[in-house]
Length: 490
Image (tube, rainbow, N blue to C red):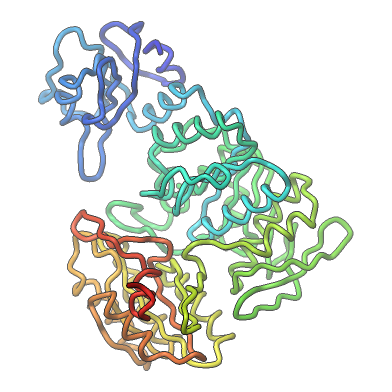
């Protein structure tokens, strides 16, 4: 594609050299550059792409894009290389990626879901409903990316970088998807990964304290403002009317047609007569003139909110209520309230709960339907929000009958240091607990001490099949570990 066409939509750029050259590939990773590439240098938290311009040119880049904030004194570019300078190469990368792949999000209906919790489950619910209604659906999210039942690969992050994202959209448009549902993280909105996406619908699940760190968001206000951006990018949205930020979203997105769903407050779609068991939740909603009873095989009050979001969207699309009910009833979401089958028939649950609020939700819900003890195994990730560690400890100590504090994904931190911060919270409670640093040993201890009337909750990792330690991901699938502990794996 002609370089000049790739730059469509980028404002206030300066250039030196030929803009009519043919570009074969767009890259922000210098190692992946091939001859006749455009290399876009992006500043990250750990790496600065401007340091790799030389390598990109050696690998065949014929054009490079630099950020206006770069240190130009240390950048040497040979004659004959086209140079483009823009005030934001992250945003420019997203725009160029859209142009490179032919703006694929225009060829299907794009649904974006943002919020602290519930994004993954809600995407799976909507996908299930749309497929029951006969549509072809793409999904992009925390666990994996799909076209229908075809898995396109497991995810490294909730929302991919813009170049990868547009490549996925291209595949989905080529496969003639009718709808694409994607989780939209606050980071992706802050870092312009979804710049240029043609969103048709937006959903807001909730906002809790999370992702506050040097590499994420400076404070809760920035966290919220990042999420708010989605609703300035879509014409129609459905938001949680029970969340304290509901009115602020409505005021902050005046051009978006917003409907609400809720359990406690007045809303456009309201859940009533809620019944929660250890395997499901069901409730009534009024659709048109009729009260319909909906069942979801994921227990917990939060499942009601996720289902309401999915129902709100599906109902606006005119999908038959029976298809909606059918799509919700048998939904399975990996690592979300996932009971692991085993020959001993022991209730062992995996859940991605990795904030104080999500841990509190699952522990409170499980206490209502578990006849015996609730045993919680959890840790906290390294290089992330440190403030939540004692809060999660306090929650576990207050609600679980027994807690084993262990390792999650320590990343570059020492597991013992993370656990010590968790312990400052749990030690303030009267809760019984112990520390077992090795997560596999912690899981084994929990299973050994449980009875069939008890429930073991392995919180924090959910769908993940690895542990991240010092920049390396090691295999760690808790389903397989449970089998091994119970002697089911040879």
